[in-house]
Length: 133
Image (cartoon, rainbow, N blue to C red; front, side):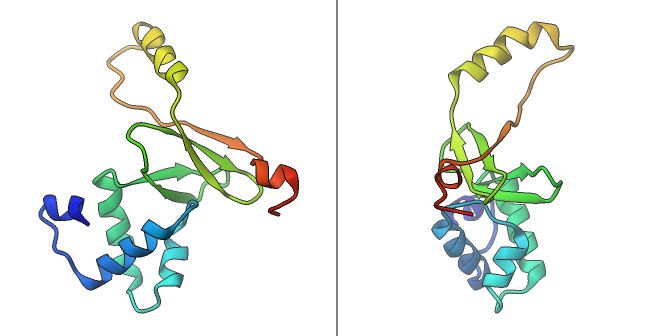
């Protein structure tokens, strides 16, 4: 909430409810899931708040294999994601090797690299062990 306030956005009860719910999320989520879990908050408010949080860097937007967007909280500064193709679990990781690769190929890319996103689609340990299905 502080990030939004620092950018001049008001603290409202619906925004607080959305952010409180997101802080409890262990895994990735869709806007529809958040809207369904908060029936007293208007769907448009949920979409607008997610958009604000994305712009502020509080959450990340993930490209799913089926094309539907999924989001996750940004728990660490610059990071990449794993997305389980079975249960949808979203993980975060940092990889110095990826950053070194970007520096190494920067000269081969016309222009200046200003950012990147990376998702690895995996079968997570829980699904491999049969705990989640």
